[in-house]
Length: 156
Picture 1: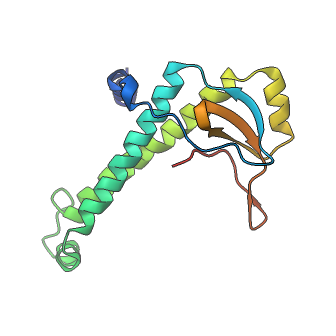
Picture 2: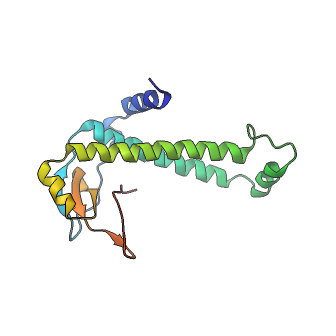
Picture 3: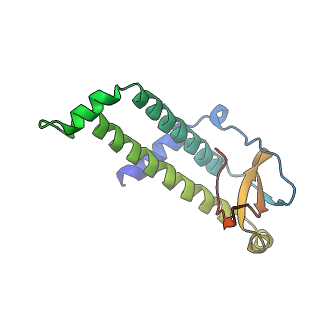
């Protein structure tokens, strides 16, 4: 099995029931309830995504404690070594975490789509996007921002 698939299996196995937080965003006017997430595996993917977001935020916060001038000097130095450069290491860590988050986003929404009924899929055709609301409810909605349609997204 690949490295990322091993990681995914191991990390999902570590998610405890207490780590699975129910989304607490109320259904908004204009949103249509189309289903509810029942699968514990899908809920674990959601929780793992939240954990990765926290790791990304923590990494960014810890990076802000680096002295910016030292990092710039290190990056521009004749002796610059990407293997030990704090900025290079941080960038690699952030890239990997972002790749994991993107994969979990795609996996989560793919799983949600496969859990939906045919009637729910028809309702989605009449809307711009879907979202997760309070108590794992799946809603179809029409979110726009400055005339741009927003695709499927997770609450942060």
